[in-house]
Length: 264
Length: 334
Image (cartoon, rainbow over the protein chains, first blue to last red):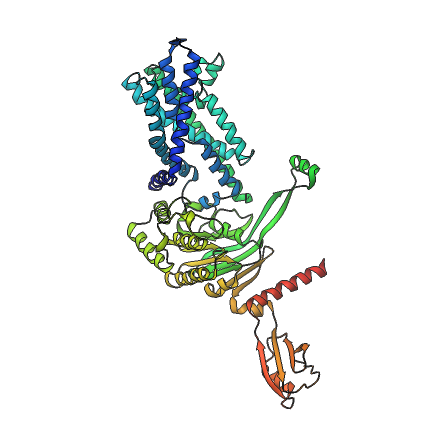
């Protein structure tokens, strides 16, 4: 355990090594969040509510997308896992008494905390000052939002690591990275919340694992789910996370044993 | 004394997806599932006792790295039995990892973006090294390999020689019983090579760390390893003391006789004449049993013999002769 805490710390510290990236990050995030807010302002075109969703709700939703999704970089994870397996660099990890996927999780957590503190928080403050942001629906919803953020990070990590491992068999890391990028934009609810999806796509979208990345944390903050629904969907999300963790463990074993048996 | 490492008929075959050349071949490669088998290690047996330093030598592709990877548990042998510290490495990889140190010359284990010292601290956490012992080891090794000037620098800013020294120190911080080094001096300059060799020899001598190292460089073996294991084309061809290599591989000694006046052609029964320069004649001594006295008495005292020089072949020459003979044999057979 001590080792993994040290890994998380090193992830945080090695992010600090590239100081220019902080500014690039803040700027990039600002542009993204402003763009999403601008799209909703344009789409509402002066109306105060559409289908019972107010423009304040939508601006807050656009900002929250930045909070939950802003810190974790799935592209980096896919590349890291994919490269380690394809080049055989993973051998170095097999030599140490640690589990590589857990190591990655720890490092990613450290890096995410860094990005969250130094890029996401400033961005949100700036945009919130410009456009205004709704507070959480209740203290219960606020507390659950934090829990959902943890779940979001875990699922985000698992999905990205899975794509990275798949690169070992499927195709170039680059194409998987792009595939994941577009899937996440659409299926996490980052771009459009599922309540605007036509049926049956809305129902389908709100039950697949990536829905827990942005849609559910934001919906909880806005109070779109009552206490019971919130707990049910939290459990549902935990179920997805365990399933994904199981799949990752299985594929990871396959890939690394193929390397050790056949020499990559 | 029981052996620390036991290899009994260890083999490793790799399956390679067969590729067909050309554009049509590329499509054929897509749909076929034909494999070619390549033997990297064939039927190799040896015992290594605690405290030994063993050089594992062979040309490119002879299966040196494969053997190291099997002993460290990251490759599974296709045949035979392998035991390291009483364990089967690939089945007890994690337990094995705690007691061995590994350095790959071509692959860094340090954290690229972090200062060297941070990599060491992480290493301490991974192996759960007690603070006092860690501090002690770090101080001693850093002094011996002169690491102190760049401990605070990021790994990506180090020269290859500095990086290699840091890699070696890190691999020893958790007091491993065995240290595996895969081409640790590759690409280093003379000074760095020398520092690394002296350090490894000292670690082996004073701490009793068993060292197994692969290399192309014979000097590595001469300075660190009293024992040599030589492989070629996946097979073991020599295992023993370096000094025994010459007689084992049967490379001949060379003899040069110098005269004050040309005695004319001078064939000898005890040595073969290879070159005749008149005043200076070169011979080859095929057998080890022939003594210089026999030869000199055959030459006689009345020929104006001025000087005698006997050349023991150096290892490099021995090995070169060995490969040349093997290639010649292969040419005849083929």
